[in-house]
Image 1: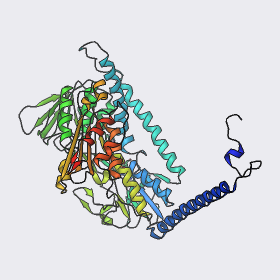
Image 2 (image 1 turned 30 degrees about the horizontal axis):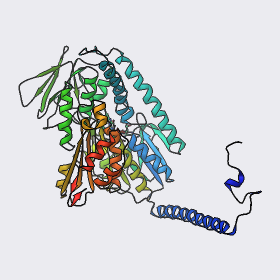
Image 3 (image 1 turned 120 degrees about the horizontal axis):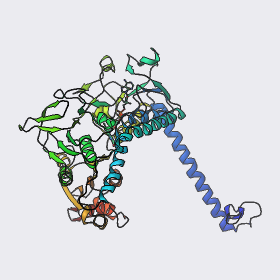
Image 4 (image 1 turned 90 degrees about the horizontal axis):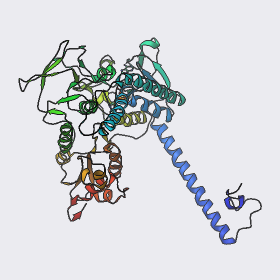
Amino acid sequence: MAGQPTNSEEDPRAAGAAPASPSTASLTQTTSVAEAVATDSGRLVAEAEQLLRRSNRRHEQVFVLGGGPGGCAAALRAAELGGRTVIVEERRLGGTPLQWGGVAVHVFLEAARRRADAQAALPGGQRLPLPEGMSSLPHQVEEVCTRLSAEARRKLEDCGVEVVEGRGTLTAHSMAVDRAGQRDFGSGGVVLACGASALMPDWAPEGHPRVLTPEGLLSSGTVPERLVVVGGGAVGVEFGSLYSRLGAAVTLVEARPRLLPALDEDLPAELSALLAARGIEIRTSCRVCAVEGSAQEAVVRCAADEKAQSADRVLLAVGRRPNTRGLGLEARGVKIDRGRIVVDAHCQTSVGGVYALGDLVHGSGFAQVAVAEGRTAAGHALGENVSMRGRHVPVCVHSSPPVAAVGLSEAAAREAGHEVALGTARFEESVRGSLAEVPGGLVKVVANAQHGRLLGVHIVGPCAEELVGEAALALSFGATAAELARNLHPTPGYGEVLAEAAGSVRVAGGRG
Ligand SMILES: Cc1cc2nc3c(=O)[nH]c(=O)nc-3n(C[C@H](O)[C@H](O)[C@H](O)COP(=O)(O)OP(=O)(O)OC[C@H]3O[C@@H](n4cnc5c(N)ncnc54)[C@H](O)[C@@H]3O)c2cc1C
């Protein structure tokens, strides 16, 4: 066939090929010997690793309790490593993201983006009415989540994982599942991946139709005219930003002095200014002490002032509580501290062979953290020398603009004893930013002032969730700020803002 290489081009030893000259022949032989050695040594290393794993193997079976992102990742990794694996899930495989969590939020975010585009196309100052088509979104969410959950099951079963439906508890040596009778699962490693549930504060009425959890608000399929969001963490900020884009008048109330208190303090400051410019009212240092609901409205009262805030709906986003209750942890002696299971860097609890991960350990976490921990827990149970130590896990808040971070904040770096050098760059000053007329946003790079090695990267601005991946890779490879700056980025593009921030870091004796 035209254009295809002939046999003689592919392989000079093929029938009909011209005999090779002595020098070419010896070169070919040397190459194939080198290739054979490389292949053999690669195989030998893989075999040696497998043998080592087997000899280190702590368990032959792995039982995973909870089929969220962390549990599924643990089960897949355990099966990949040859362990007999069972996963138990009481609701829907896929966990919180498929139970009115992240996936539902992203379906709504897409609707909000479309609405913002339509709004931008309207002549000066005209406002779109509150969206009517919202009522179809819960149905869309159900469809997407059902499909993704079925795919998760197929993937697990294809890998040889046994999926059991029901609620699992730890027993003295193993695990029991209510719907599977008192089936004895035998001995093995156990990975607890049961996630967390929305915290219901005692100062709010439970079950009132105007006082909702994130799940309740999304599944209602409506956009209230006035929404008060109690809680300025990742979920509160995400929902406040989302419902403002959908047309609600939003007030965000946070007890601490700033939004997103876990992040580098320059990010919340920048984000608050951008959200306020979009019309979101932000009340920080405002501890809510009561929420009351009536047939007409809901009222939020703060301890700091007498001014009550009324709204059509109140969203409670005050954190999540690890699902530790009823798991049989006490019977096994698993150590818990302030409601959270205590684990080491291998995700192992105080009881050997029992692992815990994700939101069950952190409360309000991120899916990618649970996944990384799931792979670590399963790997360690089956003899791998893996841990979470030194892992750089990026985090992201899907607000508008998004916020993302990896590594240490400036304050955490100083607290850890680093002498710190900083670099910043602004999105609106970049070519891409000025073309897109972005209203603001920044990248902040934290590096060691002696040698310029990166310690953390913090971003608020367009594509933050994508840019942070490059920063995480740079941190994982121990790159310096100068090395990150030298990495080439397409122009005009937002990657240039990351490079510029890294390039502006000054370290002892010159550039980072
Ligand atoms: C509204 C919202 C939006 C979010 N958006 C994002 C986002 O955009 N990006 C991101 O990274 N993170 C996001 N998160 C956080 C993310 O969903 C969690 O960090 C992640 O799901 C934690 O994974 P996990 O495996 O630890 O637990 P989960 O996902 O909570 O899964 C735990 C599973 O265990 C099951 N289970 C519990 N107890 C038992 C038992 N005894 N027996 C059997 N099964 C049991 C539960 O039914 C559940 O399916 C969001 C969270 C919320 C609430």
